[in-house]
Amino acid sequence: MAKVKTSRYDAVEQLRTPEEMAAYLEACIEEADGDAAFIAKALGNIARAKGMAQVARDSGLSRESLYKALSGDRSPGFDTILKVVNALGIKLHAEAKGG
Image 1 (tube, rainbow, N blue to C red):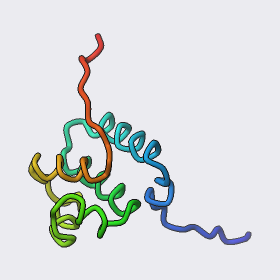
Image 2 (cartoon, rainbow, N blue to C red; image 1 turned 180 degrees about the vertical axis):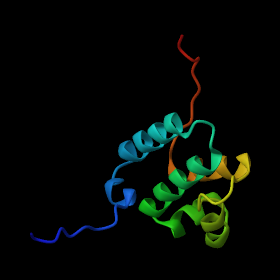
Image 3 (cartoon, rainbow, N blue to C red; image 1 turned 120 degrees about the horizontal axis):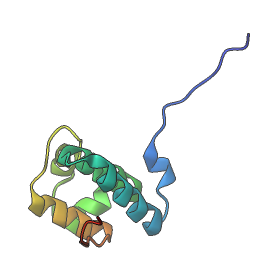
């Protein structure tokens, strides 16, 4: 029997366009079930795809603080989330829950 070779999946490789990034974040928000750290990790993946140094410059935050805030190990403050979302060029919106 031949051995199966696997590689680690990295969502960052699939996030090439702003539309893909926004769709990924929307899907993560829907699946998060209130887990802010999960959403922070998704933002971290998008930031890595866009370039962490660029996101740091655009958000006014240091790269180190971005890596910590978006690691998925903690829930960053909402002010940090807003800065990152703005730096990523993603627009957050709200709508009423259905049903």
